[in-house]
Image (cartoon, rainbow, N blue to C red; front, top):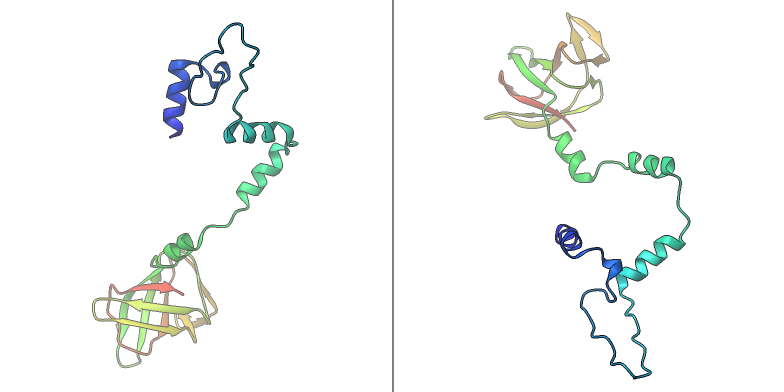
Amino acid sequence: MKFLKKLGKALLGSSKSRKTGKSFQKAPKKGTAQIAQKKVTKSAKKRLAKKAAPRSEGKTAKKKAASKKPTVMVKEALAALPIAEVTHYFPHVNAAVLKIKVGTIRVGDKLHFKGHTTNFTQKVASMQIDHQPVLIARKGDDFGVEVQSRVRAGDRVTKI
């Protein structure tokens, strides 16, 4: 709609040169004392209100726009992205080796394991890197975690 308005302004001139908003009116007949009153449209009222309102500083307006938080849908989409992948599974101790692709995983985080035949959620009780207990694992780390159910190499892991 805005494109059509701009196109009309370019072809017919600006809307300020017109006497009315959308349609042309016939000029009053000569010799009559009638004066044509201008129609005040809603858009004209808005323009007048904007001119009358004090302008805010550009910096504060930019800060307000930058401080807006992502919508709920964006957060849900980002949460659905896998942050790690199962590389190995040791059935005799029910432990899995995960490789982190994005972000970090801490003790106490809830992880969702999803694969072809795998679909469960569990809380991380403990983690180990090279048989040493750790509290945080970062991007690129391979770490071991005890799992409640069987997982397979290639299963995706998301943080909830």
